[in-house]
Amino acid sequence: MSQYTTKCLIIGSGPAGYTAGIYTSRANLSPVMVEGIQPGGQLVQTTDIENFPGYPDGILGPEMMEQFRAQALRFGLRILSGEVTDVDFSTRPFKAYVNGGKDEIVADTVIISTGASARYLGLPDEEKYRGLGVSACATCDGFFFRKRPVAVVGGGDTACEEALYLATLASKVYMIVRKDYLRASKYMQARVAANEKIEVLYNTQTEGLFGQDAVEGAHLVRNKGTENEERFDIAIDGFFLGIGHKPNTEVFAGKIELDEAGYIVTEGHSMATNVPGVFAAGDVADPVYQQAVSAAGMGCRAALDAERFILLHSAD
Image (cartoon, rainbow, N blue to C red; front, top):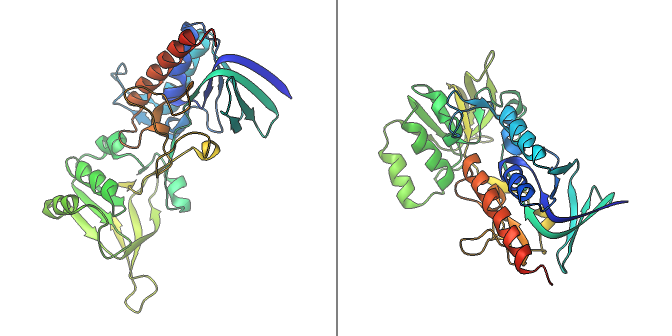
């Protein structure tokens, strides 16, 4: 077993983790990052990014994350490959175990930036067309489907919000709803019903997607498994998942406070968790916005919080 000691351990990469790495490195905290099983986070699976300040011509997601990483390395961030599989936050300094105990990291402070994973239906075509019409973020990718038909899967508030946003850009928005009703709030249901661009397909499931080089349509089935079963196709250029995200917090269950959905709870205006010295940043602590630019800002705040914590507790 290899052991590392640091003033600040960053668990997870992505915009939040790399930004925290930049700030903690510049503060001479000698940070160590365990980058996780998907270095760079969700953005490495994203194609064009046009809404992050500083890139007037846009940038590919993997390229942006490589630039974030290079900048953090330039200031001295030490990055370890692997995944944190267990933590001990019961006493300080804290301990984290990598890859089942292969490595142990002892840290004065911890910043958790493990992100959240979009929920998908599990269709092989979702992976085939990811970045080629399939998206889990209307705010990120809706701009590319101006005046083009799209579909949103889901019947809750998230799906309704995605559909309403896309209706400001797309020519047509289908909502593919498994049940015979929307689970969204009455207010959201009313807004969807009042929008002429949105057509709700109830009792409908997606069987697959099709297209030559990108999504051109979806294979759907209505009333599946009943005598009224009906199979049909719709022509779409974009297929958006509106069934939520799952925060990557399994390893922290029982170690820090999580909300009902599994997101890390932070206190007040800080990035502090209920365990003094442990902070959280990015999508893992943000069920609302989930944008790269806000995640980066949270990474900055968590780093500053960690620096202040060390200054105040240096004699402990």
